[in-house]
Amino acid sequence: MFNQRVKIKQLLSGTDVKSAVGSEVVVMGWVRTFRNNQFIALNDGSTNNNVQIVASLGEFDEAILKRITTGASLKATGVVVESLGKGQTVEVKATKIEILGDSDAEKYPLQPKKHSLEFLREKAHLRFRTNTFGSVFRIRHSLAFAVHQFFNDRGFLYLHTPIITSSDAEGAGEMFRVTTLPLEGAAKNEAGEIDFTEDFFGKSTNLTVSGQLEGELGAMAFSDIYTFGPTFRAENSNTTRHLAEFWMIEPEVAFNDLEDNMNLAEDFIKHLIDYVMKHNQDDLAFLDSRLAEEEKQLPTEKRSGLGLVEKLKFVLENGFERITYTEAIDILLNSSHYKKKKFTYDVKWGIDLQSEHERYLVEQHFKKPVIVTGYPAAIKAFYMRMNDGCEVGKETVAAMDILAPGIGEIVGGSQREERLDKLEARMNEMHIPLAEMSYYLDTRRFGSVPHAGFGLGFERMVQFVTGMTNIRDVIAFARTPKNCEY
RNA sequence: UCCUCCUUAGCUCAGUUGGUUAGAGCACAUCACUGUUAAUGAUGGGGUCCUCCGUUCAAGUCGGAGAGGGGGAGCCA
Image 1: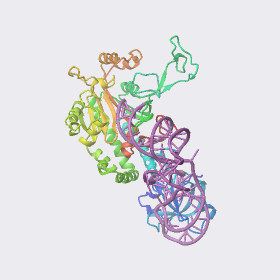
Image 2: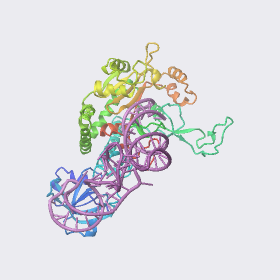
Image 3: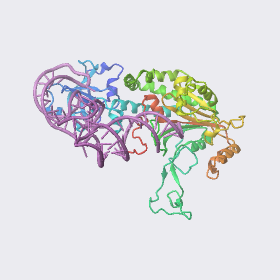
Image 4: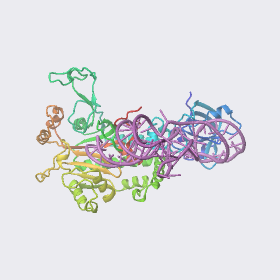
């Protein structure tokens, strides 16, 4: 058997590290640095901590030592000893070093120094080997695991909703077309339009922009379901918080109202944070100090004040602020920020909250996550439940958005409209073809119940927990407009 | 899609009012040293100054267009 190695994380993090002293171990990994022709910092991705392999002077062939370069992979056999140096408690005194894969030091792009995130973004296939991305992607993994754990523990069913859909009525954004028709010379109908009856599915199809509608169908049988999968938006968005391909978590719960929905979302977010704080302490500590270092470069007024771990702890220990849209508008109108005309966009009841408004509420006014409910019906989707007893012209829906510091909208959700007549009226108003949505309306025809759900952008959650400011740095291979490398 | 900033060595960056042969640190090579922690010291190699067009006796530097990237906005998760 080839693989009898010990993982570096395990080697360095035993309850009593020194108990390993004296035992022979095999470690494998990639060279981070090779100092003084003796000391190899070896990393295998299990942790940011490197194990120091000592190749004592004169005990190894010059030919082997030459090949120990940054990025090379090797297998080291040796004895765990207490370190004579200061950077580590134990190290491995090598008896045998085998180069598994050479790495031409002149051509290997990563060097033992700080690289810019922009540079690493263009070397996305190698950036996993850096401390920053090592930490980010280990945390991303933990978050994904915690998502399933949270819902599984609460008896939710993980529903796999389709990636390819024929529904184009969701209105969640521009869609990517899925077709096997030739780009040139596709059959056309009498009106001169492309004839999709000739296409693979016999109709026009797209990549999903949301699993919600299918999720609702599941919730009408299993009560509690969630989806967690890739989602696609063909919007020409070039920002630090949008991707063309991203992962979204969408729970849908029968018999829940808006308040239940908010409670679920808040518990969910707190569980994710709590899980990472318990299981990724080293990685969080690394990212925390990395951010602190970066903050030092910023002018005082741009500093956030709270460190990453402090911020997460604060969110965990405090309730999210819950306000209505109408209250949010009042807060904005009464703010000195508004009175000094510092907002670019005007504030009045009926507007969609702009980024600057959300930032003010979250970062200036409340200084913590805020849940805004009861948005005007006119700016929200057709499936959201109309609130009863609204003033005419000021109809609102049972929607809720969770706004997070530095990220903006991290969750969007609502109680759904379960009353068939109201739903149909709303769809007609918004020119959504009822015939195509007949399958969806069946949920309201046969045993309709109050229900609610939300969508959480997974990458935005990873951003929030890692403190990474650009969403392209929290997904392995980012897909954004004009960019699909790898 | 709009606004704005940026593009000089493999990487991070400096480059004066336009003026001789474009610099530094890191990386790389050679040598020295050897318990280092991004080791250190010496020496050396390394440039399409993003591309094209223009102004000028002279352009890395000024002007225009284009490409790529960053930040912000819109749309949203």
